[in-house]
Image 1 (cartoon, helix red, strand yellow):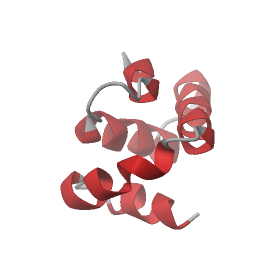
Image 2 (cartoon, one colour):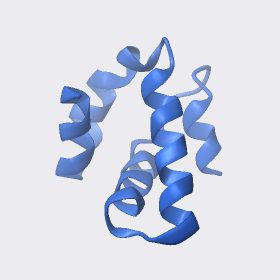
Image 3 (tube, rainbow, N blue to C red):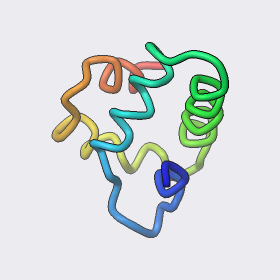
Image 4 (cartoon, rainbow, N blue to C red):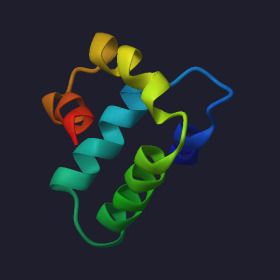
Length: 70
């Protein structure tokens, strides 16, 4: 389900992105590894920058917003 974050033809589910980010920071084991892989793929996508406004506007997790600075 979280793989839908990588479908740039659809609107970004910011709540789902927040969940993945929180799993990256607070999770462990394979859950944390999957979150890291998804976040890396998201960050490396050539259209990721187009999501910055939605993330800043709708995210409730400071860690998600801070990720925009990297």
